[in-house]
Image 1 (cartoon, rainbow, N blue to C red):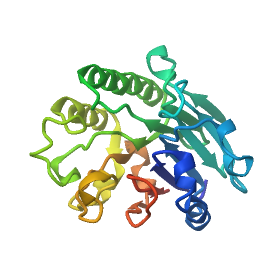
Image 2 (tube, rainbow, N blue to C red):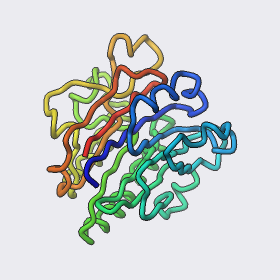
Image 3 (cartoon, rainbow, N blue to C red):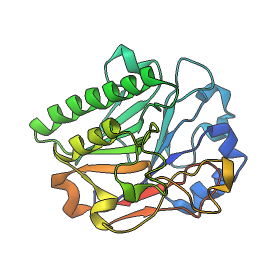
Image 4 (cartoon, one colour):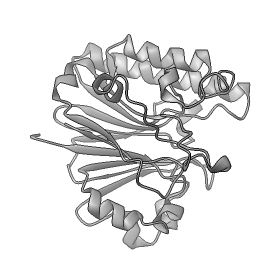
Length: 255
């Protein structure tokens, strides 16, 4: 591959974002691979015109529960192999992972669990982090290169959210959640945006309440963690915080 643009976006409902200019955005954005999270739909619930887009192959992994979770990938670059889930029944009914193996790397599109419904879901979220890292470590041990992208549902450092002290006891910024992101960075991954922009304050999610987006009171929850061996080939990471349509914004990486 000579050059590649990958974009991740938690659309908070694919059918909802279709009514908010997604078609104009996808034509203008011209990404080679688009990773969507929280699609909240099955492909058979979407008009055939919107199940894929001109020039893209579409892969969907909806949750078993209707109107919940789910991920999708649109790609103009044909993968060598496609997989779904983490080979773990605890997680795979919720439609949280699609992975695509290309010649140079394997891309994981991931919607990490949200822990805000109670401590049982925090534990579930941490188990999810653990299982995914096991898989990635196996790939690294074979000399493979990996890109993890999607909604991590965790702000890693204080710079990654507007009000860290007020949120230190809220899921999304709990010490045990942040520690798992650190663990990835200690096991062969680099946070591409933070590596390129160590001091830049920029967010990817804003709550719908309290007019947070207009005031830019946000969190950086959407990441690219790339294998250390790949970082020299990463040209840029762009947070498209001017793009509306969801409570998250798209984030692009340029290889």
